[in-house]
Amino acid sequence: MCIKDSVELNMCSGTCGSSATVDLEKDPMSIVSDCKCCQPVQAVQTKMTIECVDGRSKTITYKKITQCECNKCGASSGSKSRRIRDTGSFNTLLKMANLNQ
Image (tube, rainbow, N blue to C red; front, side, top):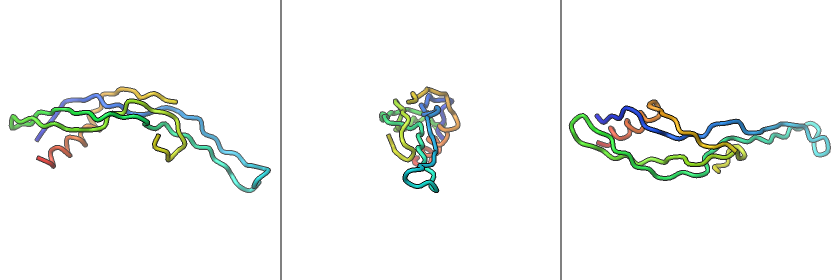
């Protein structure tokens, strides 16, 4: 089994302006939504080495978010990314590494 106490992961978070209205000219019975979501627009491939209990070390490659923006919901492209210490999300990476031993 391979472990690492903690790792810095970036995530996108923040509030983006969204609205819903009725367009009286086009269709007064229809609601028009303009939904915006905080989403990553730039990421870099990052490598990290973790130590295994049997003395080996293993390198994991993952994407690290470097920039976020408010975009139309569902689009893959303003909020800024923030750096967090997150062992919960990182446990998923460790599980994947342990499965591939």
